[in-house]
Length: 290
Ligand SMILES: [Zn+2]
Image 1 (cartoon, rainbow, N blue to C red):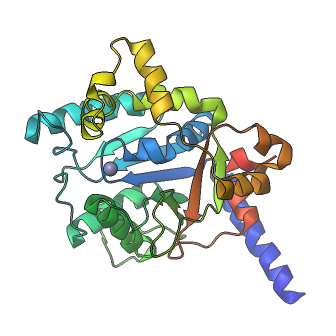
Image 2 (cartoon, rainbow, N blue to C red):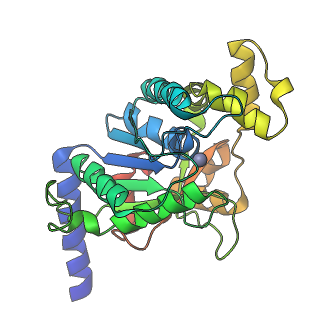
């Protein structure tokens, strides 16, 4: 009984905290300018539309992501694309000036990420898992894990006031099975904003219509007009809902609404941040309230 009462009081205090500021502050961290967009873009739009604050951070400047361009010239193009994508998503987009393809989880970059999370007063931080094919993605995950907890430690990056509470850290979905497959603890129905997500992603022209088609041998299939390109991108980047995500959607939305969902984004709770109860998750993710 006493434990239950304690949990109820904790939840009440947490609710007062979030509702007092009346906004949920979300930071999404990706290795490259377009990673946040792909992994959490629909969820970001839902947060932004409801008046919450979302920050996208690309830890590298993307200066290796092209077959014909590179270096400072490419970084400039990608920074401009990220700014345009940010407008379309309704989020602030920050691109850090670290080289693409060479990212290491250094102390300097860790401290910068800690500062960004603190300055945004983040309630939720989202990023990749540490098992991934791309070294920049893996190292971004390590940076995210290394920032969890340290964001509340006053003597680390003492030039930026620490957070009063450890945020909830979440991993974005991937298909890698080893050492452990992704677990969709939270699934967000993004069906209503899927078209906007595709439109916003399309701002990264050098990626979705040049570089990525080149890497997968379909550069000759890229359509010419904008309308055709959006349709093509939506078909190519359609995140299909697998069985585990479906079960998570049912948990959060109920059978009927989950059955109508065509597109979803899923997240796994990182053990190093705040460990939220289901009730806390519903406060942090208002779109999950039935
Ligand atoms: Zn990437």
